Amino acid sequence: MAGNGEQRQPIELSELVRQLRTELKTAAAEGAEAGEQLQFELGPVEVEATVAAGRDKGASGKVRFWVVDAGGDARFTRSQTQRITLTLHPRRVGEDGTTRSPLISGDELRDEI
Image 1: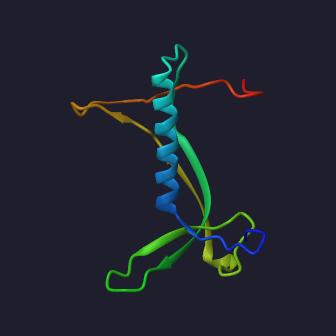
Image 2: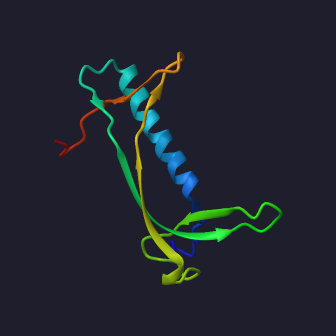
């Protein structure tokens, strides 16, 4: 849980993947705009998360996966959570439908090799 009386809202696994996709697109766009000469091909992206499964109430009754904070959440017992690893293979799709590995670039960060 967050400090200072804040209560964190659960994050759906789909939102986690959506945000990751947005961050990768932003990094690629920034590198392209800067005309970077050094770029990197983006390989598989591995994301590990502890999730809890829950069923939405209502007619559809969809099962949703919620990312659980590393510190745990009192609402979920140990037996209700699972650790999953997703390996994503990002591909850039051209207007003609062809795919290729995306390139990323950007400013070197301090202590980055």
